[in-house]
Length: 335
Image (cartoon, rainbow, N blue to C red; front, side, top):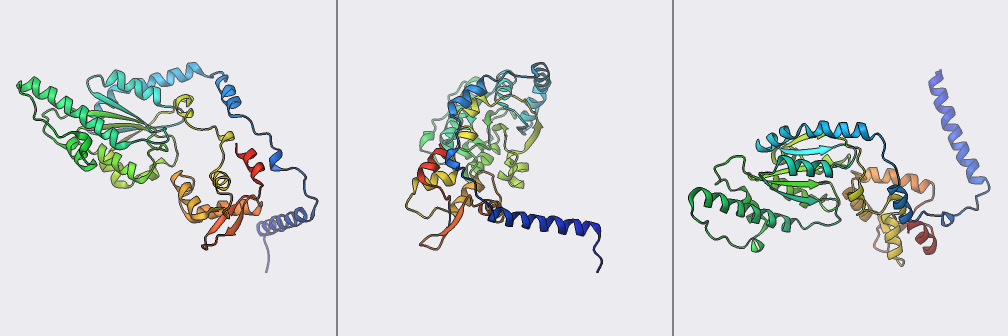
């Protein structure tokens, strides 16, 4: 059977790969250790980042001004019942807050900082209900001169009752609403399924409008078709600002000074065989790092081939991942 040039080249490449692996395994190993790495201090990184001079300021200002010309259109779309979703490289916090403070002055605005590590959504929805109730009382008093009936305290209501209250349609003005600005709706405090379901239900309330930003490329995986088109009812806007994440970044350790999940687990559980694979998969999925167990296994194969992690069997039968480093070396690399 004849072998064409393409197949022969592919065979030669595969052969050379395995020969290289064989030679590398039989050769002299390096004396360098991972523990010898001089990990940069986080404060030094932050200081260096703060001293970076901005570039292309003129072009960026022109770009941002072009977005500001869209403010009337964005406000119109909110009045029509749509939500606004901003995506693109760079922090959108300043731009969105400028839009809210200049184009939405006749509406109440509540800001949720999704880049925080934890957010109490119920308290947010209670605050929204109280603001909407105050708006209702003002409108009714102005129109009829009669005070509104006394409401049950919102703190004692369930989430379903609060959402039902915000969905009531007893206001004559169709464009009367409370605007919710969500910076990083894909942030760590909001990216769990329950929070996204509540936000979607909130967005579908007749007197709530949402203006949100996302920064993770996998953010759309948070929502199904119903949430996107029926509940959030997004109008998508690509608005790269190229602005630094100065505020958002203060709540995250810098990447070079941040220890991995497996490192943290191994250091905090020194008597165990390592981190269970199932636990790692759950965390990796929540952080949008993988979408399936198969994807995680393919990533782990690379680490296993280079002996950066090893698999151990726990007493209960679970496969665990163990980093083959002493605790002091692991601490130095992690922190």
